[in-house]
Amino acid sequence: MTIKSRLYPALAAVLFAGTAMPALAAQEVTNAELLKLIKAQAAEIKELKQRLSAVEGHAAPAAIASTQAASAPSNTASATDEDVRRDAQVSNAIADTRESEMAVAMARGTGGKTAGGGSGARWGRGGEAGPTFRSDDGFFTFKPDGRLLFDVSRTSGSSYEARNITGSQITSARLGGEGTIGALGYHVEADFADNEVALRQTYLTYTTQVFGNRTKFYLGNFLKDLGTEGSSESARVPFMLRNAATAVGQPVVSYFGMGGQMRMWGNGWHVSLSINGNSPNSSTSGSSTDSTTYLTRAHWNPIKGADGFLHLGGWYYYEKISDGVTSINNTPSIAADYNDNLAVSASSIANPTQDRGKGFELGGVYRNFWMVNEYGKRTIDSSTADSVSRHGSSFAAGWMITGEAPGFSQRSGSWKAVKVNDPVTSGGWGAFELAGRVDHYDYADAPRGGKGKSYTLGLNWYLNDWSRLMLNYVHWNTDNKVGSFQGPDAGNTLSMRAQVVF
Image 1 (tube, one colour):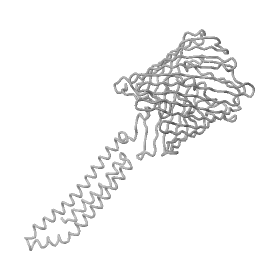
Image 2 (image 1 turned 60 degrees about the vertical axis):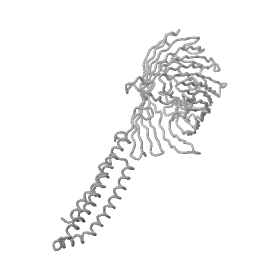
Image 3 (image 1 turned 90 degrees about the vertical axis):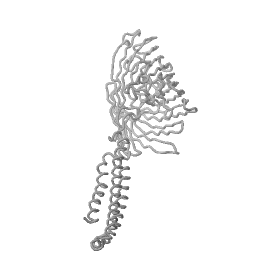
Image 4 (image 1 turned 120 degrees about the vertical axis):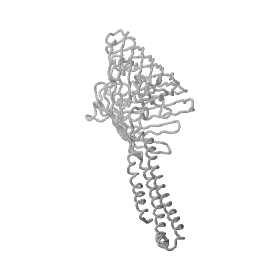
């Protein structure tokens, strides 16, 4: 057998290994890793060709040497040594290729770890139980998401039997998805609540740098940046109801609305600007001009360190109210979402033309303790009556008993998921939080406006980052001047919630 006849099968094996192995690993190795491997294979094949050319260049002298070996036995040993040397060159080349095969195998394993077990999915991102799917280069992402909130409540002690009711409800059942296409993002989410279906977080985004700061632009139906709790998902706030400051101060278009928004984040601060019309499920959409809201909010952390931070914030909006809105009479619940009879009432305001709202925030975090004090005011103008102002204030504090950092975000000034140190699903106890809040509702400036207070004690058990059990005890009192429950009244409401965010 000649040197050439031995080299061609070896070269074929090398070429096959160089092309086939990346193909076999393609489903598990990222594009970047494959590109790196292909470049390495190309370099190795080029080197192997150079070695082969060198070997073939010596093939003729080797053949002559073999012929001469018959007549000159003394040359046999030198010819044999040359064959061994050349065979060693080829063996080394094949060994190099085998090392590349090992690199492919290692890349498979690395790809599996990077992509989340080789599936291209990562679970539990952002305190949500759903998977996040990612393309090999990270350009595309997609995450199905949603939530389930189940509530049960019981009210007792009221002078009015109609207020002493017990019931349960699905407070929120959301299903949707979100993802990114490079710097572009999208979010679509439908919510079943209060026996109706509505679009909630349904928008497009674009993320970039403006003046060196991370900035995100929104277009669609999104949650407004309205105070600490108004800018937070309802599944993230420490209590089962949002506080009085945002409940009283919210505009006609409420917490959601179609429009555009810009949010910019810096080192210890953020600012937002938005213009919103009606939300998609508004009763006046399609029959009259939208109510239009111009809103801005900002927060700053003048003190921040390893143990916590101090939060200062404020918001303001102006709203041109739609001609389709003939009166305003918002009466937010003060104790339980299920019991609609527990509210502070006032006479409705006819023919509203515009309203203005403002709020102030003071809070902070120290290790596993948190505190938030918030105030909101809303002034409503009418074409047929005097302007009316409504006030809401709230003071809340909490303690993460098991030592976790509170969910109050330094970056956004809103509530996010709690990172549980010892989840129940891993054999631990989960995280426990004890929280208290005092809310004050003041409608006295309105014709026959009432007042109310609620004192809430809450215990939260975070089973893991994405599930929570809540227990709220609320002692409330109202003094209404109009409606079915007039005069001083007081009672107690006990509510429980089970929730999963995915």
